[in-house]
Length: 66
Image 1 (cartoon, rainbow, N blue to C red):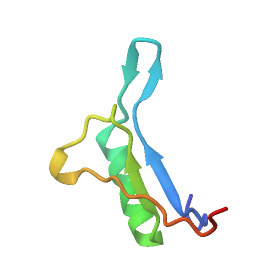
Image 2: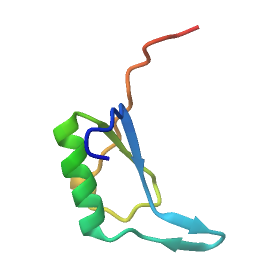
Image 3: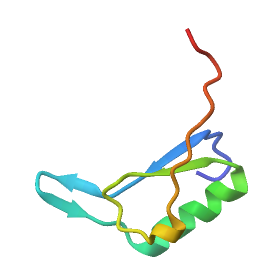
Image 4: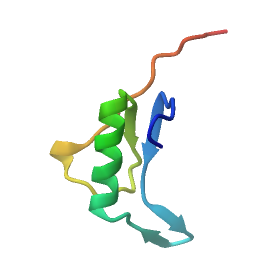
């Protein structure tokens, strides 16, 4: 992902029916560090178990509206 021109990233738990698989905290922290350096906006899915004081719900500004 280094150098990838992403405007927006969505991070959440993987689901398989009733089962939810949470990502390891260090994985999410590594992604957040990378996205912060690149200026990529981040949105956390509601199924992600993450501290509320660190919660992100950023949306990209629409560049084209029809």
